[in-house]
Length: 158
Picture (cartoon, one colour):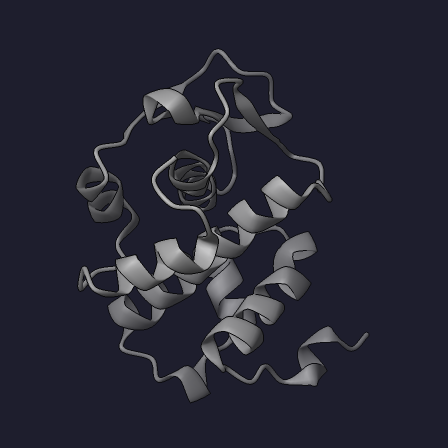
């Protein structure tokens, strides 16, 4: 565990001048590996005490898993492995990791595409990172609450 709170971690990252997940991972001295040894319903897992995480080679959203597991390595003091499954988890730890992951991904997306926050399109963002639609509401909440980006309500109408 490097930080006590997600806000503390994100504030510190802001000073680094990058939101690129690989550069952040290197900066914090965290190691990760792709593996084919995980069942399909496990996207990745982290060992926060050793600052190491693993990503399932078959995951549909490897960048999301990378950013999610990074959060565990930065914020969680456990010696037990933290496992990210393909099912939606409501746990506080998983929610915090998702919030941090989407924050990093949105900031990196805006930086690498030169899109202004007002032009942010949540569907294009989700498509570019191969994110499942189950994440859209969570992404909207991070964009609006943490980054002040207004998301059109029409995106969520049937």
